[in-house]
Amino acid sequence: MLSGRILTPSGWITGSIDFSDRIHRIIEGPAASGHTILPGFVDLHVHGAAGTDIMEGGDAGAIVARTHARHGTTSLLGTTLTAKEDHIRRALNGMAGVIAQRPKGAARMLGVHLEGPFLNLQRLGAQPPDVVPARLDLVRSLHAIAPIRVLTMAPEVDNNLQLVPQLAALGIRVQIGHSAGTYEDGVAALRLGAAGFTHLFNGMSGLLNRDPGMVGAALAHAEYAEIIPDLQHVAPGALRAALRSIPRLYGVTDATSATGMPDGEYALGTQRVFKCGACVRLATGSLAGSVLTMDQALRNFVELGLDLAEAPQRLSLYRPDYLGEHERGRLRPGAWADIVVLDEALQPTAVYVEGEAITLA
Image 1 (cartoon, rainbow, N blue to C red):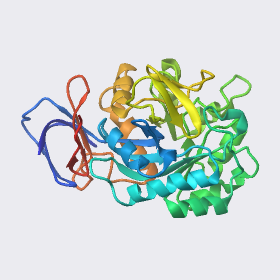
Image 2 (image 1 turned 30 degrees about the vertical axis):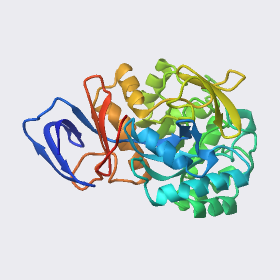
Image 3 (image 1 turned 60 degrees about the vertical axis):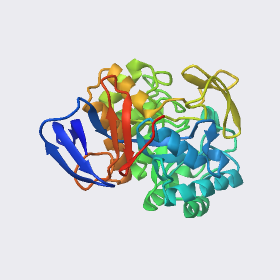
Image 4 (image 1 turned 90 degrees about the vertical axis):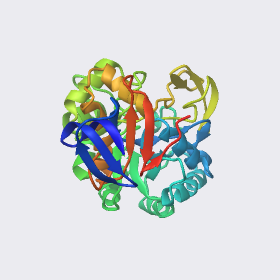
């Protein structure tokens, strides 16, 4: 039983929440504490944490899921990078066990976000150059190892666009990203079943007055898109413009192995990256993922002017809805007891994943 100010799908109530692995009831009434109780955060783009990269395979997924749970993330997608096929298979084999059975003290890994290798060489960002054209047989083979829930591709490359309906038919949410395509390419992909955009503004053709690019397609037509609200990847003004344009814009961390670690050198797939303060960069100086956690993303959204009812929607509710996971990301009877408790400074004081109390220290 927890008590405080509780954010429910109908709005705020003061009272108590009774739960085991699922929420039993929410009771309006006096609260024993002034804590804020929110649905646990859901992160659909996570590469690493605690010095560990998802592409390492083995127990990397468990380490990453445990680290992010301490910051209020109660479910996530382990996210790959462009790499040789055997390296991608190694990563998926490592995640398969974590997806099948949640490790103690960890966030629930809902599946895989396959970011690459079906990208455009011109817009790789920090991705390695091992890109290939999309192949349905390859995706099916990888999907058989571990469930691919989201797949990022550049629709303008080779026959990638033609595969969008077939991938969507597999239940995979196809996202446009790492793309040099035109506005028209983006609109065509959406019409064929693409569902969203990967780290909006980053790794895609920008918005110009006579060449609106992929950013223009997203702002004009997207219902869903992810964005990295670390205030490094996207300027506050651009983030506010996206919030006004895309109804269900949601935040992701794009967190790397440098998350939660001191400044220094780390791995991002086969790339070497360098953490310096709040940024992770390649040796060239280009941004290379982030060190963002979801509790910090919440504080950043509030700093930008979102109120404490809207900001959690962009970190909890919209993502499970996007995946069809309607028993997560909301505090209501019958839903999974994925809960984060915050103090007045919006710092987590308690986190529960499917009712299990997570040790925060």
